[in-house]
Amino acid sequence: MHPEYQYLDLMRELLDKGDRQIDAGHGKATIGAFGRQIRFDLSEGFPLLTTKKVYWNGVLHELYWFMSGQNNIKYLVDNNVHIWDDYPYRMYMERAKKDKWQEMTKEEFVSKIKGDSEFAEEHGALPHIYGDMWRRWPAKDGRGIDQLAWAVEELRNDPSCHNAIVTSWNPEYLYTMAKPDEANHFPICHNMYQLNIKHEKVSLQLYQRTADIFLGVPFNIASYALLANVVAKILGREVGEFVHTFGDVHFYEDHEEAIRQQLEREPRPFPAVKIDDAVTSIDTFRPEHVSLEGYDPHPPIKAELTVAGFRNLDNRPN
Image 1: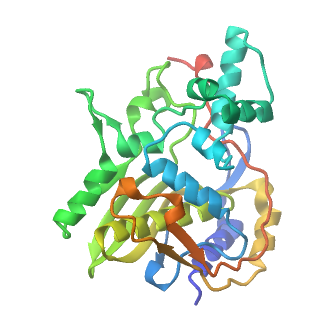
Image 2 (image 1 turned 135 degrees about the vertical axis):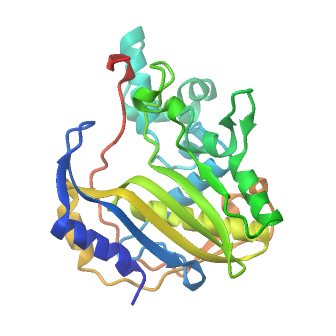
């Protein structure tokens, strides 16, 4: 059976048996379940889902943004990737209202990020986002701990190691655990992954605490499957499995029609990815070193994006 049916079957399960809840953050209804898992043998194809077209340019540039330790959306905007625009824009608008700055539309804000480097430096950053946590975890002595580089070297030096874990979940900056002036306005959703070598192949397991199965999960699958391929290339090994473990996996109620449309489609063969031999370390990886071959998906299916997790921290209790 085509491995994409794992994803499709999980969507069917949510449609048939999911629990309806109202999200306190944005007031929308989700239908979900807790604790599920899907897995893909990456030696048999790259799991870029085919029952609707997945935004490959976004996958590729976002992963590079994370792996290179960046936290400013200017790189993404410059490469026509706009999946993170909402958070810095909303942060800017909060400050604009508070400090009586000139308000602007999101389109004006993004244009300003693209064309004004000083404005982008001040207003385009998302502190403590994935790239920061992967490459510069803040230690108590002021060091920035490079978790990703450490994990790769652990695997290189001890292929039997069980500790090659990278986490983005830092309670110091999250929700009411954080000081009010230090808390993230944006969510950390795909919060931890582990790299492992079995049968000489590099595998990766992601734990995702919350997952939008229709819009987000196809993107997350591709991103972490690509990361597994990149690490395997760096280590000079074959790639093994990508294992995707979910906490709360759900769809937004207003996505139901789009999901039913997708479930009517038959999966097509997965594409392949090739990574250039120039990739010998994390820091030599570039998006142009990756080629995608044989991707022939069904057309895209559009659905409204909910900006989940954004918090107006000025109005929350201490």
